[in-house]
Image 1: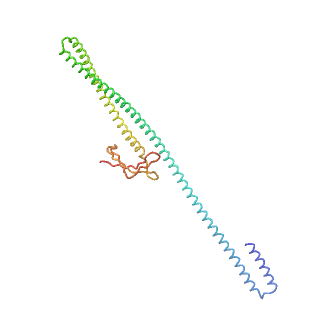
Image 2 (image 1 turned 60 degrees about the vertical axis):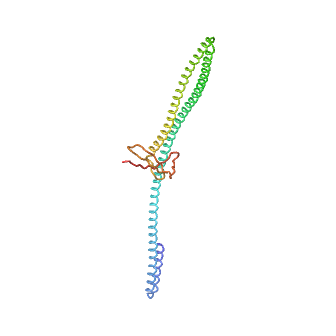
Image 3 (image 1 turned 45 degrees about the horizontal axis):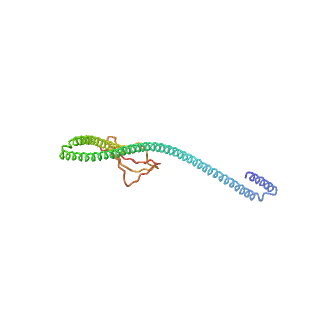
Length: 279
């Protein structure tokens, strides 16, 4: 652009020289043409300079916008990284809770199984003892009937003849022996009956122990889960509602709403807890 202006200036000087040599009649016409051409060239230069300035300004604004976009993108990426870290920590806590709850449940299941086996052994003992007692009772009945027959035989023998006194004495002795056997058999039967009663009571105690142990296992399992899940918050964690009545910081009753099904995190139930005070 500057070279073009310089070239035009040189050309115009040549034209002026030629005009001066030829005469002064057309001086005014040449001068006016030169001024017009020079002004047009200067305007073109200014317009081009303004366009470049405008382009530079827009480019600077665009660069600023991209810098702003980069900054916001970096902040967003940092927020997502922070969210990922917190989510990973939460997942690790839930995995640890699941493992501890599973171990506790297994211990209580093992206790229930051993208690059930013990109860079954005592029940088997009761059944065998009852069968033995029944056999002894049956023997006592047969022995009593035999003794009565011998007593009747003794009476008939005594009435029939004194000759049979010796036989009566022997028969009486035999009857006495059978009576003694009856007494001993009755005492044995009573001992076995008492054993049956004691065994039945023991079996009932063990059965009650099984029931209480099972109930304790259930209560402790629920209480353990509730205490372990106190810090759970809502958000993207599944929850369901239930109600706990609390008096003197002890759990008095536990009632789940029947129209809401529980959801789990792994195999651990997740609770949304609300407390009602009796005060």
